[in-house]
Structure formats: structure tokens, C-alpha cells
Amino acid sequence: GASSAHNENDFLECLTVQFHRSNSDSDSIYTPKNVSYLSILQSSIRNLRPASNSRQKPVVIITPEHESEIQAAIYCSKKHGIQLKVRSGGHDYEGLSYISQTPFFIVDMRNLRSISIDTEKNTAWVQTGATLGELYYTISQKSKTLAFTAGVCPTVGVGGHFSGGGYGMMSRKHGIAADHIIDAKLIDANGKILDRESMGEDLFWAIRGGGGTSFGIVVAFKVQLIVIPETVTVFNVSRTLEQNATQLVHRWQYFADKIDDNLLLRLFLRSFNSSNGKRTIGAFFTSLYLGRVDDLLPIMQQKFPELGLVKEDCTEMPWIESTLFFAGFQGESLDVLLNRTQVSTAYSKAKSDSVMQPIPEHGLESIWNFLEEEEENGAELQFSPYGGRINDFSESEIPFPHRSGNIFMIHYGVGWADNAEYQRHINWIRRLYSFMARYVSKSPRAAYFNYRDLDIGMNNIKGNTSYRQASVWGFKYFNNNFRRLVKVKTEVDPTNFFRNEQSVPPTSTQ
Ligand code: FDA
Image (cartoon, rainbow, N blue to C red; front, side, top):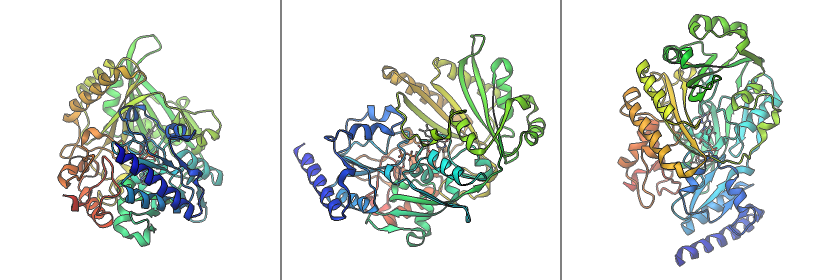
């Protein structure tokens, strides 16, 4: 209505004045009248589904180059009641960084993406607008034996990914990204710039897996880099049902979390047309070994002879090349890691689970039936093994709780290009998820925060959300750590300024 338009104008006016006052460049303010507004809005969107379900567009997008602009944005947002959403890489599965049902604007971190590496201490300061690809590339330019443990897709943003966990191909040897955060720079709800020391250990704990978004705007993380061998080995071998895929996947569950920590065998499962044109299920064993092929083969021979892995299946390469391999860019120049824009043409929905007991063969066969139902290649399950270094930390070390006792994580995904089929795909993934309840963790049924899923529970869009209501999704992502997250939130942001559909609520709003 008229009053909200009025608010929006006052808000814009406020931003302009504040930006001017801090001598910063107001080129970093994009209103819908600006010719670049739409391209900036869309450039990092990886999933067309959230925006297609939402009618609101951001009142403005700002792309700060200085912290003072973020402080101004917080000040004006509070003053005029326009909700602030912060976006780093834009890969949130439910689009929470760039959609809202109330009037909102986006603080887009794309221009704050510097990376500085200290090769003596093996640490790096990484601004949150950087992507994983930029981080991997920059490390590789400095050293052949330094790396970082984080996700596979190079366009994922550091801001969302590190603050929400960060699982990748080296996680069995080195844990997740959040395990390696040693300092941070955060702007709180009062516009104060804090580091580890001034924010205190409780808040510093919360932003290492609890999601940055409930607590402030993270400008940068300092991380401990990891040391890797100069040569690593990769393979991606597939087996169909006719090649015993069911038995192999079944067997995999008994060693995937216990095998040599240098080895991570991730499984991708989908229905596809095999070379003889027959429809079947493919189990793709996609793997990284932190060492040479001659050391890998005996391990595979001992622990998984059924797969029949041979030397010819394997390729040795520097670690940085392996990031291209797993991202599907094998053979391309390393520069593709720096490519931030990738126009998306697909709608998708994903969900996650954690498995603590192997799924029996007949359970796997039921999964194959589900995959066969989705005829096109848009449906896929990923089984990502836990164990190794992940289990060296207690469940409460950081908010990410999926430690000892969990064998692997399941990622369910479905994608489609024609949105007329929306409901069919959503129904499919929800039916599969409900079928899987018997095989996965219970009370709570665990979910991985970075695989955001609003089906598992949501806050109220307007007004307050009780601890009880938020517990429905909160315990799934964080288990008992959710209680401490609420405590931290109550201390640092009692008015719930930083909020979204799945942000941690303060108890004062009960
Ligand atoms: P985005 O900018 O959308 O932010 C995600 C959330 O964090 C939002 O709520 C946002 O407000 C908040 N946020 C962002 N920046 C912030 C900041 N600076 N301060 C405070 N809050 C901030 N995960 C994984 O563990 N391993 C993997 O291999 C992959 N692979 C993968 C591939 C693809 C194609 C996608 C789409 C996603 C993944 N993911 C993943 C999931 C990914 O880790 C998750 O979506 C991250 O939250 C994405 O972070 P972005 O910064 O890109 O998202």
C-alpha cells in the first residue's frame, strides 16, 4: 500500500544520505530503475524455484565495498523497517538470501571478496563475497601443498557455506570448512564491527555452523589452511544394476566412514540410459584419495575388492585439478574457478538425511523404484560419507552436530526445466523422504543446515516465533546445539533484527 511505498522511499533516502556521509560511492545502490538491477539480482541465483514462488522483489540491492556501507544499511533497515537479507554466493536452496515475503532489500557481498594468504602460518583471511572457486584458485597460486576443505561447486559463496558447515571431498581427512575457522570479522545488529576477541567465544562458536544470518553480517573469516600431498588421485567409476550396483552400494555402507581417512568415496545414484539403451540405475563412485594411485589400489583391494577398481580407472593430478574434476570442468583451464556467473535455467528442490545403520538391500531397491519414476535425469541421490576427522570433534564443538555415530549423509535432489511439472516433482521428493524415515536418524531426524529445506519447519513470516516452533526445524539441523544457539541469539540480538524463515529466534520473543 501507500504507506509501505512511503517507507521504501524514506529507506532509500536514508541509505543515500548515510552512504554520502561515509564518503562512499553510491554506485553500489541498485534500485529497480537501475539498468543493472535485474542482472545483479539474477546473477548468482542457482535455483529458479524460490523466486518463481515469490512476488516481492528487493526494494534495493546494495553491493558494499566498505564496511561503513553495511553499517549504514543496518541503521536504515532498523529505522524504516525494511528487512535486510544478506547474500554471498546466492546458493541457498530456498533462496533465503534473495527472497522474502515482507518488504526487504539485499546486501550483496560480491565486492567484498579479497583473499589474503599467509604461507608461513598457513592461514587465510577470506572475505565472505568470495566463492569457493576463487579461494581454491588463489591458494593454488601460492602453494602446491596448501588447500582448504570445503564444498565441490566453485560458485558457492564463502559467507553461507562456511557459516553453515561446508562438506567436501577432503572432509574425512580434514573435517568441514567450519572446523577450520580461527577468527572472523562480523558486524552485529548495532553496527559494531567485532572480531573473535571482541565478540566472545559464544558468538564465535555460533557462526561456525549455526548460520551467519541469525547473528550478524560476516565480512570475513580467517581459516587454517590444510597441508596436502603434491599429487592426489581421483576416480569416478559407475556400476549399473546389471553390474551389481545394489550389492555394491549395500557393501559401501559398511566401510565408507571407516576406510583410510585419505580416501573419500562419494556415491551418486540416478536412473539413466546405459550404453545398450536400456534404462537402469547407475551408482557412480566418485572418489578422492590424498596420495598416489599405487597406495590407493591396495586399500581398495583390501576393503572393497567387489568394485574391481583398476589403475586405468584412476588419474593422478595436483589437488587444484581435482577441484575441476569434481565440479565437472576436467580438462578446462583453472580460470573457470574464477567464473562467478553461471546463468541458471533449472528449478530444483533438495532434502537431506543422516544414516546411522546401513540400509538393507530391499530398501535400496525401493529407492531405485523411486528413481525410475522420475524418468528424466533430474533426480539424484548423493551418499556422502562421514567418519574420519569429522568424528574427532564432539557433537557440541561447533553447531554442526553430525559426528560420531553417523555413517553418511543423504542428499536428495530433483531438478526440472518446465515449471508446469512443479507439483509432480515436489510430491516425488516428499514421498521419497517420507518413505526413507524408516532407514534414517530419528528424534531428531537430522538434516544438514547448508542443504536448506523449509519443509522441515519454518518461523512465522510476520511477528514472533516461539522457541517451541523453531525447535521443530532447529533440532533437526543442530540437535542439542540449538539450545545454545538460542541462548547466544538472545544475548547478541534480542530484538531479532537479523531474521529469516529459518533463523534462530531469541527467547525474548516467546
Ligand atoms: P547464500 O548467499 O544464498 O547464503 C546462504 C545463507 O547464508 C542465507 O541465509 C544468507 O542470508 C546467509 N549468508 C550469506 N552470506 C552471509 C554473510 N556474509 N553473513 C551472514 N549470513 C550470510 N554444501 C556443502 O556443504 N558441500 C557441497 O559440496 C555443496 N555443493 C553445492 C552445490 C550447489 C550447486 C549448490 C546450489 C549448493 C551446494 N552446497 C554445498 C550448499 C551450500 O553450502 C549452501 O547453499 C550455502 O549456504 C551457500 O552459501 P552462499 O553464500 O552461496 O549462499
